[in-house]
Image (cartoon, rainbow, N blue to C red; front, side):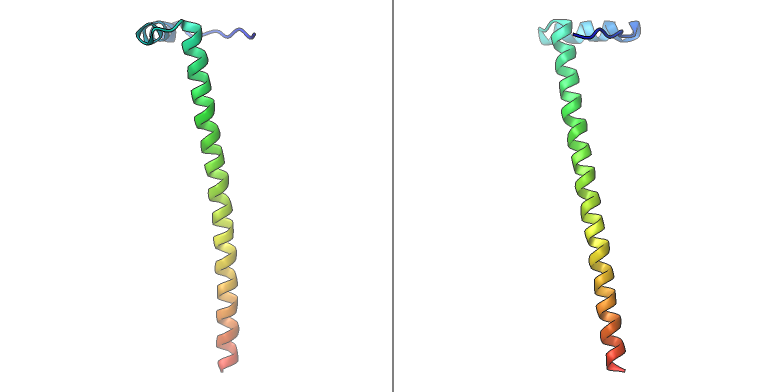
Length: 76
């Protein structure tokens, strides 16, 4: 197990919130860290997915433009 230092300005808030949830300070902090990691990983996955969609959209648009220009050229 690793040890971390929590700023004094934050420790009172952690103690109060843990008590309100009926949890030990340690259980509250572990839960908070796990919640944060889950959310940040979901954001990372969403960002990757959006980048894939954007890349696909750009490639599709370029192919459309190329086909359009080719057809326009063949008509003249």
